[in-house]
Image (cartoon, rainbow, N blue to C red; front, side, top):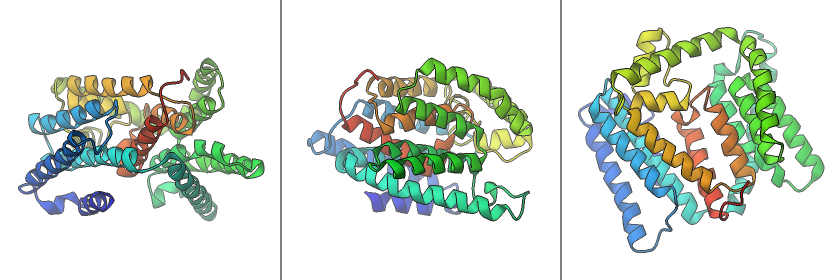
Length: 338
């Protein structure tokens, strides 16, 4: 299954090479194979069911319908549908075959590499003050990946090593200059350490004006993205303009290349309409009902805060990370009221 997913993402790295005539058949074929495989395993009791199965599969179904409903960029829509199918398959695989202990160990190792890499890049950029992390990748994506890893430092047994993890992790997050990442980190650490949620929200709200003024131009551009996404939603309110079509819609209207609305709710509203929002709300409700205190839930809570000013799951690396953490959180037990 892992090899299958890697081949899909590698093959679709340059999606236009498939051609608009062939890709829809490929997308539907992969969808039938993956969903059929999952259904076969469930029927034979070889694959455990979870509370997220129905909303996840419904979300993919709505994406398929939306891709045919009002699609500007049909090739991009089919690629996005394939990505969503890959997310569902990854969730099922991790839930069925990966233990929490193994995932935690892997996350900590990867976290050290990510922290060291971001700090090293930042130190190299000291020679060129005008350069940013964008030179080697999207800073918000790096921040979201870092955010998914940092709460797992709580599982490090050695006190000094654990302290170094959180200090260096905070430095790395600052180095990304991602304001959404910083807000998400505040939420994640607050949930992890049991800080009163009202205090977290109040402190974040107080810091928001300073974060906006830090990169005011970026904040103004985001407002333009949100306005364009709202226009897209109003043009096709029931099923949206099709998965991945914010890329074309916003880019044409704002005049800058932008793959999403920089707000996960506005992106879904624009691309999958009211029906997509309802299914996404059902998914969030199930996640809330079955949340479990610990690093996975803290990371997911912080990631959701970040998603109010960005849409990291548009990129497959953070998306697969979120699905893995969801699976591990569900494996750990029932809702403990955290």
